[in-house]
Image 1: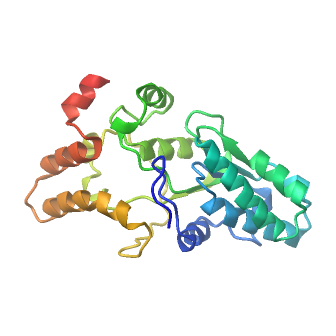
Image 2: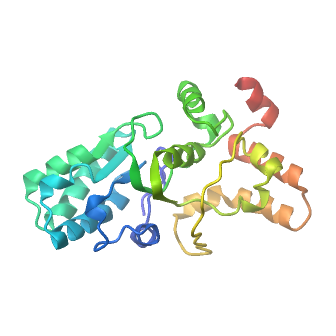
Length: 268
């Protein structure tokens, strides 16, 4: 599996299929009349499967290729990744009978070189993906300020994936589904103290219909697992009573953001 790039952790195909199944993006259910958004497409791990499922649904109901122009919207800030994703998604369409010219035109329309958090995003029935894992201190200061201004629950202390959740929830249509890959070990700290320690200023209520625990399943490459080893240790110490909630939150903040909360707050 590929390594981390721009905070992106490239996703294994079985995980992509699981996410899409859980979200309900399944051929035969009318998905060719819906809109799906992939906020950080990378090299197209999700898009190749999304395009195949969309094509299968459209073929089954007799929809023409030209009618699918607004069915997918995907974003990435890396132009090379955008081009790779377009080629991969076009190949997926062509395997299902889409003429090469139409496949390329659709993918040009679907896949945008842009910032999901700051760009205009269509109202979506599905938002799926693997948000990038970038620490708050590694986000460009000017862009970080724009994210804070744009999003209600984001502060300067938030890692990038928080912005993706916030923006994604805002872009959902009523009854829509957001399904992201995210670490689950934050749950013990998600009360007011833990949320404050994570740098989140506001928590909004949304229905959580399903949470899939992957356990020890090999979802990520070894270098990513090593990155989170310290996080696991801190949470183990909290769960065993060695650290109290405030201590664990402070240590997580220091580990994830590279500095203490007071320093982060003073930087604005």
